[in-house]
Length: 161
Image (cartoon, rainbow, N blue to C red; front, side, top):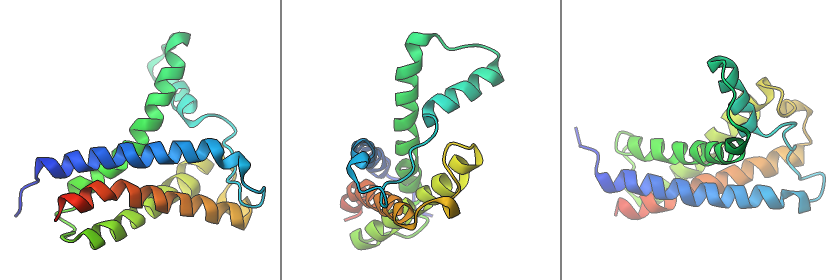
C-alpha cells in the first residue's frame, strides 16, 4: 500500500481554499443571474442554522460578536473539508494522472451538490426540494459545483505529476 504524501494533503487544502473562495464569490453574484437560472437562496444562512443547532445541543448560546465570524468559518470549513478528504483518498482511487484528478474533481463537485442541494439543505427546510426548483436554477447550481470541484482539484492534479 502506498503511503499518503504530505504534499497531496497540502494540495487538497489549497484546492479547498481555491474552490471555496470561488464558490463564495460566485454565490454573492448569483443574484445577477436571470431568475430562471438563479439557485434558490436559503431561507436562512446555513452557517447560522448550524450555530443554532449547536447551541441547542450544547444548551449554551454563542456570544453575538462571535456569530458572524463563526458562520463564515463554517462556510469555509465545509468548502475546504471536501477537497481535503478527496486528496486523502486520491491514492486509493488510483488517481495517478492530472486528467483523472480533474475528472474526479468534477465528480466531487457533483457529490457536494447532491449532498447539499438534494440532501441536507432541503431536509432542514433551508431550500425547497430539488423537484420544486426551476430546472435551469438546479442545473446552474450543479454546474457551479462542478466548477468548484474541478478548481479544487487543480493543486492535486499538479501534485500527482
